[in-house]
Length: 83
Image (spheres, rainbow, N blue to C red):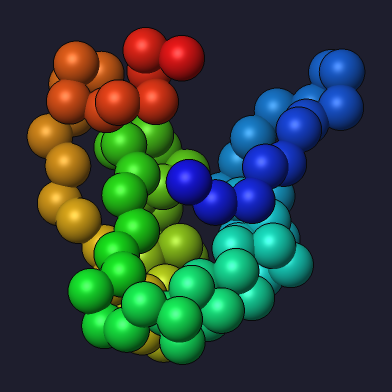
Protein backbone atom coordinates (compact mmCIF):
# COMPACT_ATOMS: atom_id res chain seq x y z
CA UNK A 1 0.00 0.00 0.00
CA UNK A 2 1.01 3.54 -0.49
CA UNK A 3 -0.50 6.98 -0.86
CA UNK A 4 -3.64 7.27 -2.95
CA UNK A 5 -3.93 9.74 -5.81
CA UNK A 6 -7.22 10.12 -7.64
CA UNK A 7 -7.36 11.56 -11.11
CA UNK A 8 -9.87 14.27 -11.75
CA UNK A 9 -12.67 13.48 -14.16
CA UNK A 10 -11.30 13.63 -17.69
CA UNK A 11 -7.65 13.29 -16.63
CA UNK A 12 -5.48 10.50 -17.97
CA UNK A 13 -2.40 9.04 -16.37
CA UNK A 14 0.82 9.65 -18.27
CA UNK A 15 4.46 9.10 -17.38
CA UNK A 16 4.80 12.83 -16.70
CA UNK A 17 1.80 12.87 -14.34
CA UNK A 18 2.95 9.62 -12.70
CA UNK A 19 6.37 11.16 -12.03
CA UNK A 20 4.65 14.11 -10.36
CA UNK A 21 2.69 11.69 -8.12
CA UNK A 22 5.91 9.85 -7.27
CA UNK A 23 7.72 13.08 -6.43
CA UNK A 24 4.96 14.60 -4.32
CA UNK A 25 3.42 11.56 -2.66
CA UNK A 26 5.25 8.29 -3.09
CA UNK A 27 8.91 9.19 -2.47
CA UNK A 28 8.22 10.90 0.90
CA UNK A 29 6.07 7.90 1.88
CA UNK A 30 8.73 5.42 0.71
CA UNK A 31 11.43 7.19 2.73
CA UNK A 32 9.29 7.12 5.90
CA UNK A 33 8.44 3.44 5.50
CA UNK A 34 12.04 2.53 4.70
CA UNK A 35 13.24 4.33 7.84
CA UNK A 36 10.71 2.39 9.88
CA UNK A 37 11.10 -1.08 8.28
CA UNK A 38 14.56 -1.02 6.68
CA UNK A 39 15.94 -2.19 3.38
CA UNK A 40 13.33 -4.92 2.89
CA UNK A 41 10.82 -2.32 1.67
CA UNK A 42 10.12 -2.68 -2.05
CA UNK A 43 7.82 -1.09 -4.61
CA UNK A 44 5.45 -3.24 -6.66
CA UNK A 45 3.89 -1.98 -9.88
CA UNK A 46 2.32 -3.70 -12.83
CA UNK A 47 3.73 -3.15 -16.30
CA UNK A 48 1.50 -0.25 -17.31
CA UNK A 49 3.23 1.99 -19.85
CA UNK A 50 3.61 4.85 -17.35
CA UNK A 51 5.31 2.49 -14.86
CA UNK A 52 7.87 1.31 -17.40
CA UNK A 53 8.57 4.63 -19.15
CA UNK A 54 12.25 5.54 -19.32
CA UNK A 55 11.78 8.74 -17.30
CA UNK A 56 10.14 6.73 -14.50
CA UNK A 57 12.73 3.95 -14.51
CA UNK A 58 15.53 6.52 -14.40
CA UNK A 59 13.83 8.62 -11.71
CA UNK A 60 13.21 5.67 -9.39
CA UNK A 61 16.75 4.38 -9.92
CA UNK A 62 18.12 7.82 -8.97
CA UNK A 63 15.97 7.77 -5.84
CA UNK A 64 17.25 4.24 -5.04
CA UNK A 65 13.76 2.75 -4.91
CA UNK A 66 13.84 -1.04 -4.82
CA UNK A 67 11.31 -2.45 -7.28
CA UNK A 68 9.92 -5.95 -7.76
CA UNK A 69 9.90 -7.37 -11.28
CA UNK A 70 6.26 -8.16 -11.98
CA UNK A 71 4.92 -10.30 -14.81
CA UNK A 72 2.56 -8.50 -17.22
CA UNK A 73 -1.15 -9.26 -17.18
CA UNK A 74 -1.12 -11.06 -13.83
CA UNK A 75 -3.78 -9.45 -11.62
CA UNK A 76 -4.21 -12.81 -9.88
CA UNK A 77 -0.84 -12.24 -8.19
CA UNK A 78 -1.84 -8.84 -6.83
CA UNK A 79 -3.83 -9.12 -3.57
CA UNK A 80 -5.29 -5.60 -3.85
CA UNK A 81 -7.16 -6.61 -7.01
CA UNK A 82 -9.51 -8.62 -4.80
CA UNK A 83 -10.66 -5.53 -2.87
